[in-house]
Image (cartoon, rainbow, N blue to C red; front, side, top):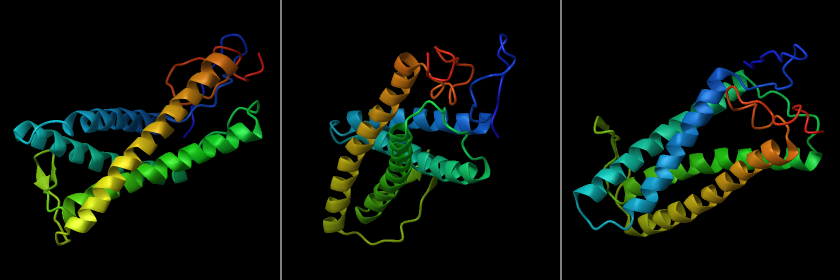
Amino acid sequence: MKSKSNNPATGVDPVQRHGAITQGLHWLTALALAVLIFLAVVMVDLPLGLEKYQLYNWHKSIGLTVLGLMILRLIWRRLSPAPPLPKSLSPLDKRAAAWVHRGLYGLIILQALIGIGHSWVADFPIVVFDLFSVPNPLGPSRALAAVLVGAHGWLGWIIVVLIIAHVGAAMRHHFVLKDAVLARMAPGLKPRGDGSGTE
C-alpha cells in the first residue's frame, strides 16, 4: 500500500511513497545489514576465544534474520508493488535502479544461504540468538567449507559495493537531481526541489 501526504501549497503530494510496511522492512533490513558488516569486519581479526564465538553467533543469527526479512520483502512486494518512479528519471537511471535492486535482493539471499551452508559443512553450530539451534543436514567437508568461506567473503565485498552504489544514487537524487526518489522510502522526508527533479 502506498501513502501520500498533502502539500500545503497544492493539496497534492508529488511524492508517491512506499507504504509503511515496505518502508519499515527496508530500514530494518538496512540496519541489520550495517550490523552484519560491522560484525564481519571486527570478528575475523579476533583471536580464538569466547568473544569471537559470541560475535560469530550474533553474525549468524542476524544473517538468518536478514534472510527472513528478504523473503518477506519479496512476498510483500508481490502484494504491494512499488509506486512508479518519478517521470524525470531517464531510461538509463530506471534500468540501473532495477538492476541494483535485483542484484542486492539476489546476492543478499545467496550470501545468507552460503553462510548457512558453510556453517553446516564446517560443522559449526548455528544457534539463533541463544534460543535454538538450526539442525545440520549435511556432513562435514573441509574442501567445500574452504570454497564456501571464500565465496562468502568475496560476495560480502560485492554486496558492500552495491550498497555504496545504492546509497550514493539515493544521495545524488536527493541533493543533486532534487527529485523524490529518496523521499519515496523515507518517512516524512520532503524532496529538496518540487519532487519532479526538473528544478
